[in-house]
Length: 171
Ligand SMILES: [Zn+2]
Image (cartoon, rainbow, N blue to C red):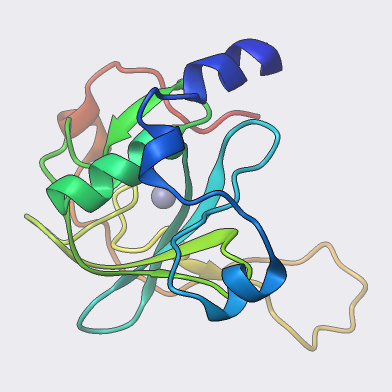
């Protein structure tokens, strides 16, 4: 399966769109966009709200998703659970318009700053941010730990939006 994923992830545009990684100096201090994809052809992406700076989600992109994001200004990801290119909001209408796309020092992680359409939610569970719960740091009980909610209510009803489509959350 991993091999198939790798083959699927090798878009024909990839070799020309992104620079080859030739030296540490080039990657860290140069102007070449030379993203590093992992063995499955993916790069991690953290996405924040351009206005509030809230972390909305963490996703993964393959080369095609990254290039389409650059070309269209709409966030695209690679869905690991569904194994397909994913235009964020294609089903829900909650698209993410990219205000800025940053790459980190060693170019193995992407940061998208976005404006979310519609209700402003980015989480398929219905919350604005996927990070709607926290773990109580400093709890010395030894666990198990109870999660604390930081969003009072969902911005939409997932059943109304997604119907009986399979839940991307996998156990
Ligand atoms: Zn989520």
